[in-house]
Amino acid sequence: MLLGFGMNAALGRANFSVLGVAVYFHGLIYIGWCLLAVTQPSLIAQGERKKHRLQGWIGVGLAVLMGVSGLWVTVRGIEAGRLQPPNIFLMLNILTVAGFWTLVAAAIMKRRDMAWHSRLMTCSTIIITGPAWARILPMDLLGPAGLFAISLAVLALVAWGALYDRRRRGRIHPAWYWGGGVAALIGPVAPPLAFIPAVVEWAARIASS
Image (cartoon, rainbow, N blue to C red; front, side, top):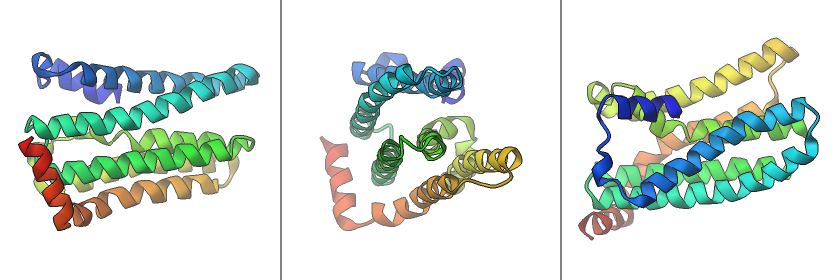
């Protein structure tokens, strides 16, 4: 995520003068989540389970804020005309947030089983890399295939984790299949839902507000 958005800024594709406070807040929340994704496993490796649990509940708060701010930024982007077509982006981001929250909730429920918990949390983080991939991949050249390419990139990260698991443990943990399944559904399901008349009308109302 840091690579995708950092490269976007370095290449001058981001117009910081038109971005509102909500966008910066959204970015800071996501950076916080990335930092947690790195520090949480290291705390377990060091035997600091109490600190891990404390930071984990902070992460729950971040996860809620991430979803809310992500949807808010989506609405603001549609209103500003930056997200086209609006119905596709609206539904894609709603499903991404839903998938992220689903995996985070599942990981919390499995928090006493570290094998499940850690992998589900990893998958939840992978799912939200879609917007970063959209800034890394040549979306202008890919055209309508861009959404498919993003889905493949996200699934490639899940597959990498699963294959690493197999190499290290001799088998792939079932959590990767659940995480990969959620990730695989978002790309193909978003376009059909986006063209439901009610969704098209909803996105149009947001765009015209």
